[in-house]
Image (cartoon, rainbow, N blue to C red; front, side, top):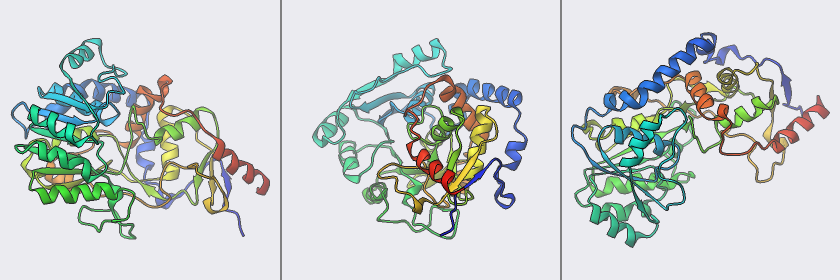
Length: 380
């Protein structure tokens, strides 16, 4: 059987090079200044631009909120004058200073954020504690099953809006892309719990909105998305990519702003919205974009056939090995929302505020890479 492993110094697929414009326009100094401006304006004005549909201060509960998206979402909401409570198990600090965040901004946020400690799977506690608080709006960013949402709805009969973080992973695999909100869904997907939650919300009559992100990236990302590439680039290692490398996918940096956009927005009532970046990108293109973002040389790419390897329970690549991307036209046209960062800008933001400072969620593990590279050296 012919081997698909191939070592490349420069992998080019002209017909699929969707990043050509972004990468050819990349200039370190220019991009750095643009990012500095966006970061400065982001927490100051970004929320104000997006929350125009909600004219009054709300008593808001965030289920979760101490990791990644919740950290940025809670800050945007507090900046807008809302009273925000995080419901968590108390295993992580409720407030932690972010890279680039001033001492004054952090102190202001810390003094205003509230905490409700508990286990969301304890339905009796959820009903009792939430009914006593009488929240106006609930953001559920860590719910996975409908049964976890039922006691929340029951506890808050006067709830104005329930905003749910679902996933584009609910769509049925298709040859016709991008996925749109009306596409067929897969009741057997690993995200079926989120799909069932959407169905439950629709059946209750509550005012709900569901956000379906594709792959999410950005500073403090707890999933090994961009971090997976950064580890290999920093170590000067080849980057193993399954099959041809022209599989197209999509990453989104601005999920928190999308969540704020739907708050109090009548156009978002009982609607589902795909949220992600503007562009689609190939796996090869993503590797090169990460290199640009971190200031690394052109990466060496290794293509391999996953069927020829036994990685055990380890995951050799952080993305599903298929085309997977969704249309964000509905969010743009109905909500007036659009991504703030393009792909390279977003990756640069993530690198400079996180990995580039020596912080990451998971230690580098090159064990599957070594299996691939070891075999490629033998068969080359």
